[in-house]
Length: 325
Image 1 (spheres, one colour):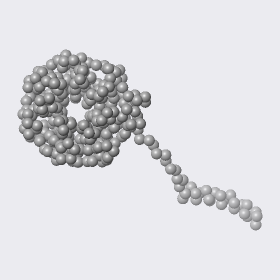
Image 2 (cartoon, one colour; image 1 turned 90 degrees about the vertical axis):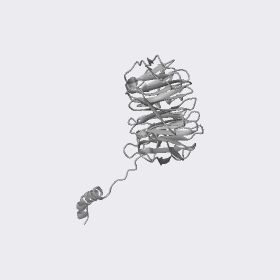
Image 3 (cartoon, helix red, strand yellow; image 1 turned 135 degrees about the vertical axis):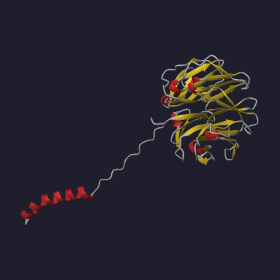
Image 4 (tube, one colour; image 1 turned 60 degrees about the horizontal axis):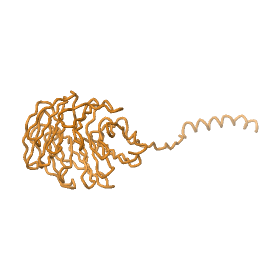
């Protein structure tokens, strides 16, 4: 009997192993991978600053990157609708509003959730391209002449759209309270009655991408590197020589000088809005940069990369944030 048992024992072991291989699946609990703050596929189209030390970058695939003074203060937010976010702005009380494709807006305040709201835009082309906080209202503009003005809380919206198939790119307000909108095909719109009516004029044929004012001085930039300057609050505009033919996407005055940025890593500066020169800060990416935002210690830039320009020195974020701002 023992001999038979000894002969059968190896076959029993083999049979048990075969059964285990066929029917018993090992379970492995994967360790969760930490979500990086930003990823190589992330692209950014706008930046805004809210209360001291809080910065907001709007990007593709519903992404908003919230930045703070240190890396521990950074947060990655993904909107409930997977749309590219073209613009972002903050009011004086910390409310942040992001806007994007298909008329979607997303409102955020404090530690609350992002609240989605879809504005009644065109079914043909409904992208909201920019949002700005001007004189107690959020203004959202975009394709097909879309112009919307909200109440102070961004809950109720009034449609003040411009009739026609035209994409609106940027909106600014003068000290006198007049509104200016840059648009494609060289069109500039102007309102003296807070958006109730609009008058258009043509400044060449290149699409105008951004407009900004500093006192009575104004600057417009656009495709092909075009630059226009006004010294009378926008009543007249004169084309000025440009050191680039790259598309220019944004212009600001940071209280010391004019700055413009755009495609191909172009970054321009000017003391008076007339004479422009190229800046070449070290490690500044050669890709596109879409928006500039002046802050206390420099200028934030959003685009293919994000970061801070300070005294003509460039810091790529969040890589340069290990020691804080």
